[in-house]
Length: 113
Image (tube, rainbow, N blue to C red; front, side, top):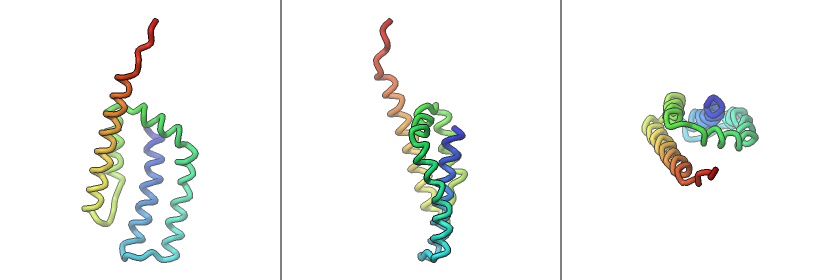
């Protein structure tokens, strides 16, 4: 779960940089530089993508809820209304993926001995 949190933090940092720069509805060159500096870490997500998917699929329902709570606690936008919508969407997506994962596990054929 720590791996997922670390990589989620990378995305949150990029989103926060864009949100902070977009407050005045324009992004200056220096703000683009700050966004680019935060975006450099995206390679870690790409590099570890398979490992992240495996870690996510291994989450229990409790861990999935904890990840959703972590996102809600760490994610912050200037517009609280938009922030709330995004947090709700992420929570729903995590719940749906949990249902899909559990259904996939149920439908797997049992090994015969």
